[in-house]
Image (cartoon, rainbow, N blue to C red; front, side):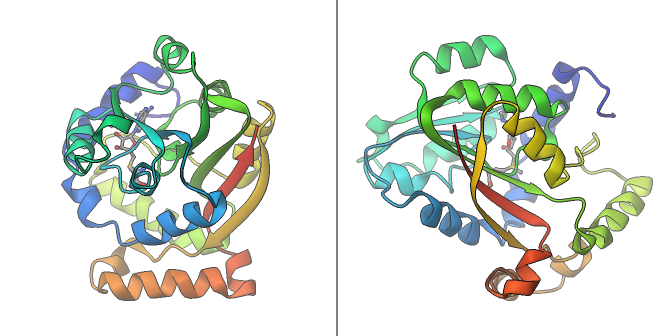
Length: 249
Ligand SMILES: C[S@@+](CC[C@H](N)C(=O)[O-])C[C@H]1O[C@@H](n2cnc3c(N)ncnc32)[C@H](O)[C@@H]1O
């Protein structure tokens, strides 16, 4: 399936893929680092209304729930939402909402955005979306004026990402595990789409992505240490392909 496929067809392929979440969740050595960067970007974590788009098992937004914020978990995959629900403590359950569907679906986002969110997380999602411009419009609609959006994507323009691209290209000749093409997300294109909707980058963190083939053999703790090293090293960080942006509307 290509980027030219209708969004609903693509969305169904994405949903099918993430209805079996274990391959993704078991290979997620970078989740602690992502959560820490989000915490650093946001500062005070209580008293917010948070929308976690493509929430997966809720690992990134749980810190807000536990700090007393309200979190709406939105995901295409009912199985991901089930895992996210299971991970919510009984103390926090009154502040947690779970919505199954696509954030590209206008009727769904119109309902959700009746009360806009202070903070919208969109981490690990843009590569699965066909139409970046629609995604950017929905993100802006869902965010309160003056509110914040955190997006994450892989910057295809960085040479440090090219070995991963080459690996994905070759792997897809044999078997594409997704059943659809991941959307290329060069930083300039992502920024153009988001800034056209009034979202401005306020802070950026970059680090390197280890090659998928390396991930199979190296323990998670070492992969995590490698990513932290590339994040903290000024020069290496500049050439990192994994990007997290704090944006304001
Ligand atoms: C790679 S996972 C990332 C999960 C989580 N944010 C994390 O960082 O671990 C992508 C998630 O986004 C969800 N997703 C993809 N496209 C979506 C869409 N259009 N609307 C809502 N959820 C979507 C998938 O079902 C999946 O759970």
